[in-house]
Each structure stands twice: as C-alpha cells, then as structure tokens.
Length: 327
Image (cartoon, rainbow, N blue to C red; front, side, top):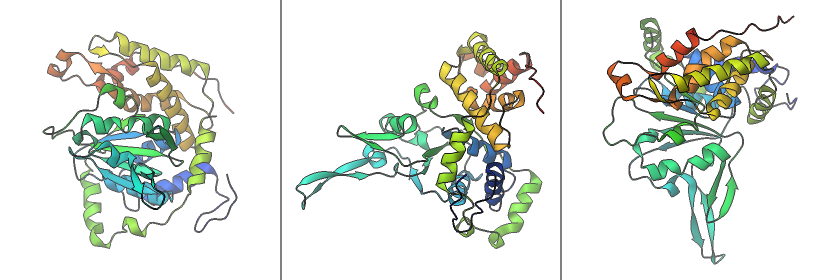
C-alpha cells in the first residue's frame, strides 16, 4: 500500500483493515446493510459493476453516495428517463468558435463512481451507450476513443415492481454486470434505529474519506493475485455446467459468468482479509453472480421457481471440494 500521507487516512493500515474501516464508515449512515456493502466493495475490487434491483426508499442512492464519499472518489448520478439521449450519458461534440473546430465535452459517465438510477426507464439505444463504458472502460465519439477515469465503477438501479414505461435490460447488457443485488427491507429493530437517528444522525455530507482512489487500484491488483485452488476451478465449472442442463433453465450461464464468479470470489476473499479463496466464498456469491445470467423456461414462472432457487438447488447437489489445510 502507498505510504503517501493523505489527510485523515492512516498510511500504515493493512488493506483488509482499511477496507473494514470503509465499511464501518459507511455504516455511520447505513443501518443493517453490512453484507450489501461488502458485496458492493467486492464488485468494485473485482473491477466489475453492480446492478441493484429493489423497491424505492431502501437506501440504494445512499449506499453509492456513501461509498464514493468514503473512498474520496468523484461521484456523478444519471437519472435515466425515456427521453434521455446517448449523448446525455457519454458526451457530445460542441463547436468552439475560438478554435473554429468541434471539441468533445465529456458526459456524466466520465467519473469514478457512477449511479445509473432507474436504468430500465430509458430507451435501449441509451442503455446501449453504456456498453462500451461497462466493458472497455472507455467511450468512443466521432471515431475517437476516450479512456474513463480509474477506478471506474457503475452501480445501476431498477425498480422490480413498476414495469409501466420501462425497457428491460437485454441479456447481453445484464451479462456486463458482475452482480445483481437486492437491499431488502430492514428488520423492525433496524428500522427503529433509523427512526431514532432521525435528523440527529450523521449525514453523507458529514462523512470523511477513509481511503483514496489509489488504494482501490492497489486492492484491485492484489485481489487478482488471491490464490484459487484447482479444485475450486472445477467446482465453479460444475456449478455453471449444471445451469445449462437444469430442466427449468432455457439458457444457462456462459463462460463469462464462470470468469465473473472466479474474480468475485477472489475479491470477496480479499475483503475478508484472506489471500486464498474457500468454497464458502463461491457458494455465497453464486446466486448474486449467476442468477441474472440465466433465462428461465416459461413454465418456471407459473411454478414460482426463481433463478436464485435454481442456483441454491445446484449448490445443494454439487459436492464441495476439500482444500489442503493451510497453516
């Protein structure tokens, strides 16, 4: 880790300690969402993106804003609407009279952490404008390719209840998101805690950064080197292969999904302070990484069978590898 002294940041903390400090910092404004915070950090460290599907009012915007503030990252938000144009996302060329030429004005996608709010409310053409950014971390306009800032992390949201006036993300674009998560309602005890805080609680503006963008870059490099036993590669392949053979699945998980699960498991192990992956990492992440990459058979909906249930069924019937004992 860099030993550069930055205001309010301890340069001597180990990476896992610093990551836990980021989580603790976010919990000053987020109640009962530690597991979701850990998974979002996992997506960021794995160099992926996260799709958050849940009802309004459960803290999706607060989650990404507190993440950006805790990591001292540049943050921008795009509210997706049916009339939003691709250039409103990526940027456009403006004629400069002084230079007598067109110059590119970057759009809001040029940031480090982007909240793509209600992404399924905009047209497929505008949704597709994010594809290059999600996959290549760049934007091409008028034949010129512009690199996005590093790190670059997109957290997109969509409402699973209200479908009127929405455009469901196509499978190819869903596949670009490392994980699809849900916040869920708080427990009664957690909701009471939220109410007690009221206006007296800490606001996002009051949060102080506890890490910096260069720390994220270092985490990403180190997480990619986390040990992944050969038996775990076989375990991942068995899980993915069974999604292609399951009677309730029309289209199973692709090889990209297997790669995503491997990277996510490495990043999650790193968040937990380990330099090696264990089977429980793969089991915990499989529903979040694989479910949105599957197309279910038509009759599955009538039987109330969800992709998450299919993954859990596969995990329950797949032998878990025994790793060599580590000292």
